[in-house]
Image (cartoon, rainbow, N blue to C red):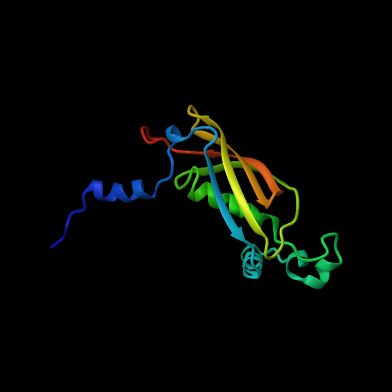
Length: 158
């Protein structure tokens, strides 16, 4: 016998998975993600992105550069920002509109990067949230910048 699935049963999982809605966000809300960069991270990022610049994957080459050794891809570290925005704050359901990043210092294998996202402005009329972004290793900032995201409303169809 076929069982009917109630609309409430379909909606409930979406509600459980969803992050913040626009009207729940306030300036100064913060979320953090911490990750230690590994050799595997760099190899996999190089394979997935197609960016096999020897600065990232060839120690002999990288030793001859200003960095004196291999460094992680800047966008690998930038991806940690996406992890915060997409999973924590504002979280699932939000979408990038734009992002500006400033690469301040290199990240190397073994470095532990702390990524902090802080909401600076909530624009209820456009459903946009502007966030400050900072990736750091200890006290040293390695990336900073900002992003604008669209965040859905709980109460109206966007």
